[in-house]
Length: 101
Image 1 (tube, rainbow, N blue to C red):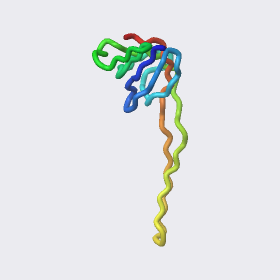
Image 2 (image 1 turned 135 degrees about the vertical axis):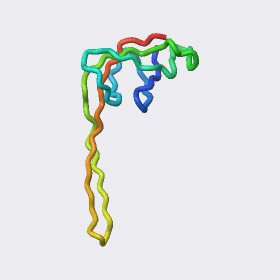
Image 3 (image 1 turned 180 degrees about the vertical axis):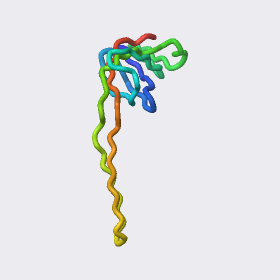
């Protein structure tokens, strides 16, 4: 089984061919391809972590998605202070098409 650990924005993801993952939002339109840098590659029993300058993972952009709504609430007792704020992270959904070592 061949899989790789790739750097996608501020995170690292474990991917194999055919996986659909969500990465931090990118401006690439749907249908286009991206190349993600490889941090670690595993090919059966062989683990490679150095010399991965030429290694790359090709992904196809499927579209934009949003994460779950997060509600932030602040409250201070006896002062009448309360604040409510929401956040929803934006992601790009991609499908792994090829792993080149």
